[in-house]
Length: 274
Ligand code: HEC
Ligand code: HEC
Image 1 (cartoon, protein in one colour):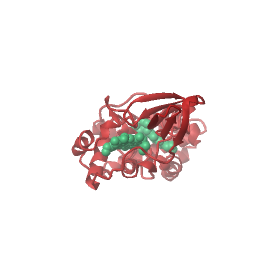
Image 2 (cartoon, helix red, strand yellow):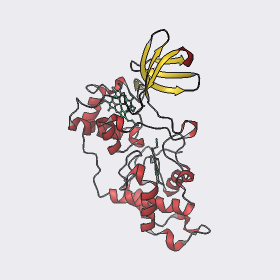
Image 3 (cartoon, helix red, strand yellow):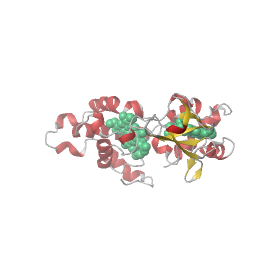
Image 4 (cartoon, helix red, strand yellow):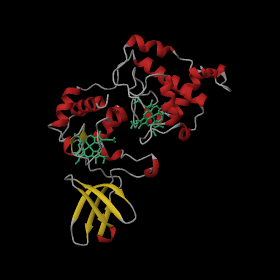
């Protein structure tokens, strides 16, 4: 998949946004009378996408879609392809999962483009100062002791290099204020449903104690990333006690952060990957 790295110049983009009736209008079986139907498009969007991208497209578990330029979308065809196929290996499901046929995919795509066009005249939900957020992240906030951004930091928690593409502002705010509220769950492939970043406390038969994040687990072994950033692989036969702390987060609650700090961090995180 091509990643559009540079924002499109506005004159190039606006004609694209005008392309409300999708290109698939001529497809066999496409009821052309319905295909430009903005109300049906919105209903489909709300039913199939709103839960992750927000009913207004402002983002949540998925990124904000109500923006003029979507980082991975160069044209409507590419947008339809993402909606049809999903983004493999990520939390973005394909149309088989969302049960949308080609006509519905085209309709939803037109609605997403409409959300973007509306955004052109709107301000986004991000009000913080990204530069100050950057400084907080790398200095005062101690975030890099658990997160990697562009190769710097430690991988105790999830890598945040492209977090701005992956999550919306509301989700990020909540992740900082009440970390245990939303623990990421793998949705793709064999690991589907696997709770990621599950904090685990292990006591071995030798009396060693490990507190860390489960990285992987099978019937015989478990791998942990400890809070100090070391990778440990343990045979289950050597484990005397194991406590899986479902619903807990190792991420410190942002109690030392003011409301402004959180907003500035959210503003900084939103820029990552764009
Ligand atoms: C289960 C949650 C979920 C659902 C349902 C969902 N998405 Fe997504 N979507 C995501 C996530 C998460 C990403 C970011 C993937 C990544 O990069 O990790 C994403 C990414 C995208 C992108 C890529 C944006 C870009 O350019 O980077 C588009 C477009 C998109 N989704 C559109 C849709 C549409 C339209 C629907 C409804 C048919 C939909 N999504 C349904 C979670 C979801
Ligand atoms: C002690 C380790 C630790 C520190 C310090 C830490 N985090 Fe986290 N963070 C985690 C873990 C683990 C997760 C995975 C989810 C969970 O457990 O809450 C996480 C999740 C996140 C997420 C959500 C990612 C997603 O895709 O769901 C964001 C955003 C985040 N952290 C930002 C920050 C910021 C900003 C700071 C600094 C103020 C910070 N973290 C400090 C461990 C840490």
